[in-house]
Amino acid sequence: MTSFIDYYLPQLLYGTQGLLICLLNGLLFLTIIVDKSLRKRKEMIVVAGLAGSDFIFGLGTLIYAISRSLVLANGISKQKISAWICALTVQFFLQHFGQQMLIIINLVISLERFVAVAYPVVYMKLNSSDAAYLLASIGGFCFIDSAVIYFSIYYGSLPAVSADCPVTVFPPWYSQYFYTLISALGFLSILIYFGVFVAYHRAQSALPSNVLNQQSHNAMQRRLTVTLGIVCFSTLFLFTIPYGIFAWGKWTKTYITIGSLLGNMTRMSSIVNVVIYIVRQKELRTAMVKLVIPQSKVSTVTSDASRQLRLRTAF
Image: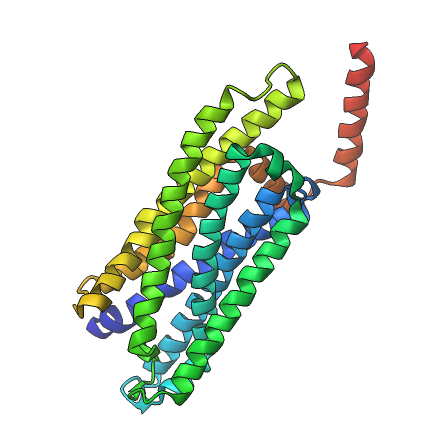
C-alpha cells in the first residue's frame, strides 16, 4: 500500500491530468477548426492555437505518466541512464514544446486584445490567415529553441539520471533560462491586459451603438475580452507564479520543497482555462454540442422549414 501511494498514485494523478488536458483542449481545438463561423474569426484562431499547445503539453504529460509507471513496474527506476536517452523520448519534446508554445500564445492573446480595443481600424484589417501565420512563427521559434536544448544535452557533460527520466535532464543554465522566460512572459501578459481594460473603457464610448449589428458585435467582443482576461489571470495564479517560484529557486540555488504542488497547479491551469471558455462563451458551447452530438438531417430540414415559416408570417 505504501509503495502504491509513494510511487503509483502520483503517476495516476499525473496521467489523469494529462488525459483531461488532452480531451478538453482537443475538443476546444476541433470545435474552432470545424465550425465555419468560429474559424473565420482571427481571435478564435489564436484561442485554437492555445488549445493546440495545451493538447501537445497534455499528451506529453500523459505519455510521461505511462512511461514512468512502466519503469516503476519493471523495477528499473533506480538504474542510471544518460540524459540524452531521456531527451530522445517523445514526452520530453512534447512537454517542453507545448509549455513554450502556450505561454507565448498567452502573451499573444493579450497583445491581440490590446490591438482590438486600442487600434480597432488596424485590427479590422487583420484576418484569420494573419493569426495562423503568427502561430506558425511561434512554432518555428519553439522548434529552434528545442534544437538548442537538444544540442546542449548532446554535447554537454550532464550527469547520468534515473531511468524514469526526471525533469533534471536540462542543463542548469537552460533550466534557469526556461523558467525565467516563462514567468517573465506570463507577467508581461498580465501587464498588457491591464492596458487592455484601460483602453477598452476609453474606447467603449466612442464606438457606434446605433446599429443593431454593431451592438451585437460590441457585446460579443466585450464578453470575449472579459473571458480572455479571466483566462489570463487564471494563468497568472496557476501557471506563471509557480514558474516564477521555480525561476527564483534556480537563481538563488534554493530547493523548492513544494515542487510537486506547483507542478500540479501548472497542469490544472490547462484544464481550468478550457472550463472558463465553455462556461462564458455561448458560441463555443453551441458549436461543441453540434460537434459531439451531430444533428440529424431530418431535424436540420425541419428547423430550416420552421425558420422560413416564421419569416413569412412575420411579414
